[in-house]
Each structure stands twice: as C-alpha cells, then as structure tokens.
Length: 177
Image (tube, rainbow, N blue to C red; front, side, top):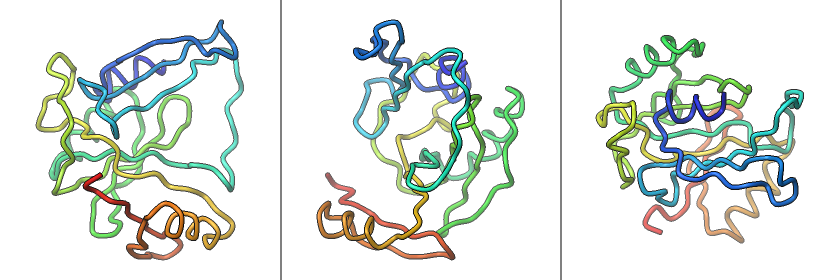
C-alpha cells in the first residue's frame, strides 16, 4: 500500500529498499526524485499488522511537497481517481495548499510555489513533468508551546522567523544551502 501510493500515485521513484537493522524482518523504503536529490527523499518502515498511530502534540503532523503553480487541479483529479479524498484547497502564507492523507493516515500537503527547487524529474514515472512533485516544501509540527522549538530553530539551527498566520508559525532556513 505504501509503495503503491508513493510510487504509482504521487510519482516518486522507489530508490532503495533495505532492511530495518533493528528488526531485519521489516523493510525500509526510500522514495525520491530520479536521483535521490537531498530534500526529496522520504523513508518509511513497512511494518505489517500494526495499528494506526494517534496524532498528538510533539510530533511532525504533516509533510508537504512543492508542486508547480497551477497544478493542484491535476492533483485533485489524480488523487480522486486513485480513491484518495482531498480536503478543500486552502491558502497559507500566500500559497495554495491541497491537504490529504496517505493510505496509512499520514497527513500530506501539496503546495504550489513559484520558485521550484532543482530536483531530477523521474522520466519513467507516472506523473507528467509539468505536475510532478519537486522536493519538500515544509513540515508542520504540533506543539504545546512554540517558544522552545522557535529558540532551537533560530538560535541553534540558523532558521529565521518568517511569519505567523493564526496558530501557524513559519520558519525558513538557508534556501541556498
């Protein structure tokens, strides 16, 4: 289910399968662009017969990908054709966002951005290049208190506070790194 969704629906290349070294009977899947460009690689442990987790504070709640401006209509139709229910398109920080859940319940968002990062398009993939995912946009963390994490991001990791909308705070790092 995980492999089918990320490879065949979202169009990410299945770049590697290893074993979980702590549990060698469990696979570790890697999905990315054509070359496994940093900023495009997402990994999963393919646990079988495990109950769904419960979302809560102190965790990464959403993984968001960059997509080209004007592509969310394509993605709504593609996800619908593949039985994935999407939420309504939202606007956050001046960008259009299409939220949905993957088959295991992980929240995923597609964010239209004007300036796309350089990734390698997977020529043999199922998604046309003009709509393809272009690496990660961001993650959303659920926190009781933003201040400790803000301090870590700004003071220790070099991020900059880039705005606030309601209960969402945005931090950006060096985009030239």
